[in-house]
Image (cartoon, rainbow, N blue to C red):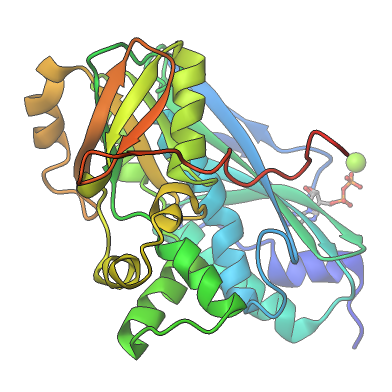
Length: 326
Ligand code: ADP
Ligand code: MG
């Protein structure tokens, strides 16, 4: 039987919440959802679109698209130190393909269950494949991590490892010599990013500034520097690399991948030096851990220093959807 818009929503997206959430006054089914924001909390809101061929290659598995659409949004909550709670989903589909919808919603809801996110609404239209998720979360008033709080002398950290997703994308685009194990690792990192939500929450009151790395370390750290009115020095030899990226960089000399490639969804954050012990304590049980990669400086600009002491200039500005000469 063909799916109507309403049977599609009913069948694939209006799932009962695993646990009743007292802050959801009204969920899917009306013209808007109603949420209760608890006393003393601020509502953090972010949205991210994934467009086919731009944010994920053609032929990406629908489970992975469902996972990634939510993961990218959870990562924005992580970067704010917010606890993600609710999501809306705007889906534009070329056609109502049942097996695609079943796999997409399985990927989406598996990650939603892991983080206890309730889908509270959305929109379903026909057109070229595009997925927009809006995420809503809570953070104690005044405690959100912003981009603008870094000061000269603050230490710069990143969670996890850098360049894995970028290398995964390269594997899809051109033949690269990589062991089967390394290839599987970088594809997993590209298709199944793990948002650093617990780490972001643990950084409240410790990090002076934070951002998630969606467009590459150079570009995203650049946003912290711009918002904070500072510069930075990065020690390239300190960048945390997986075995896969490490062996690739040693072979190819391509430092551009860990420094500038996007899609890793790790956090980059700054910490005043005296809070270093508190940081190490806060992240001691973190799965991703964190690595000290550099220091905030008063002089504007990003200075990347190689192991031999040479200055490396990162290629301009990460991924940009619109260029200045359009
Ligand atoms: P309206 O026309 O008033 O915008 P719709 O008929 O589009 O509402 O949607 C009916 C209900 O289903 C709304 O509560 C809406 O939030 C929800 N909804 C629509 N599409 C989705 C989706 N893809 N996922 C989750 N909820 C959805
Ligand atoms: Mg309406």
